Each structure stands twice: as structure tokens, then as C-alpha cells.
Length: 189
Image (cartoon, rainbow, N blue to C red):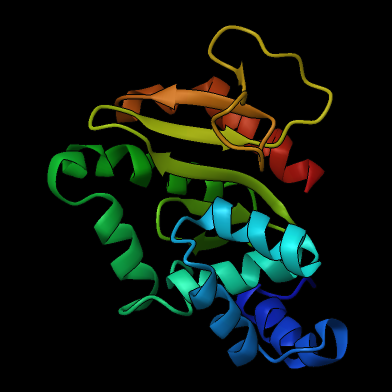
């Protein structure tokens, strides 16, 4: 069975000095010194200026910005609560419907909240849920080989970690099509 995201992160941290020449604490000092405060910018900096692989750069960025469940105060529940606070509170039922649909795909679905989205994983990420505006949740799905059509859009600039996006405004939008796309992505993961 696949390791959880937390187990994978811990293994990377344990091997970081051997693989990169520095400990996590040393890389966090490099991240702080860079002045980068956006995840993507920090990852790009660590890769281009320090030669880190994407995986290690992503891990350092999450730890520096405290944007992963293991670093965020309050853990998973606090990350999700923050995503659906204030003007996005009315979108929480859409999130709940998506989580229910994802869990129906199989017992090995992992729900891994981050600062601005929730990753849905099996052996690898197959989807993500992001409250993108006050009125819309975006479901990013990895569906290799599937053509964009209608509601199933190409991900474009939305998120490079997924191939497609579906825009959802109400729980009823999590319909048979969305559930089918989730199951297909889950099967490919």
C-alpha cells in the first residue's frame, strides 16, 4: 500500500541531507533568505538557483510557508475551515459533496488538505478541490488522454498538477458526470 503524504514527506526529510547536501533546517534558512513568499516563486528559486529537484523544492516551500497539513497550526481541519471561511462559507456544501463522491471511489482515497486546496490521492494525486472564488469551487482532475469537452475543461493556467478542471457552484453540480470523472481519475492513480 502507498505511503501517506505525511510518511512520504518524513522519508524525504530523513534523506534530505544525503540527497541535497543540506538538512531541512538549512534549506528553510535558504528559503527565508530568498525573500520569496509565494509557493510557486519559492519552488522556482530553489530549483533554478540551488538545483533542488521539484519534490524537495516543493517540500521546503510548504514547510517554509507553513502551507501543508503537517506545518499548519490546527492541522487538516483548520486548513479546510480557513478555505471555506468568510465569503467562501457558502461553498462548503460543494466541498462536502465532492469529498463524499471521492470517498465513494474506494477505501484508499487520501484527503490531504493544503493551504489553498485539498489534494485527493491514491497512489498519487488524482484530483484537487479548490475554492477559487466566492461563488465557485474548482475541481481539478487528472485524466490522461481524455479530451476536454463541455464542463470538463483543459486545466490551462488553473493548476499544472491536473489535466482538467470542472467549475462547480452548488452541491447539485456534483452530478453523475463529475462522479464518473472522479472514478476514472481514481482508477488511473
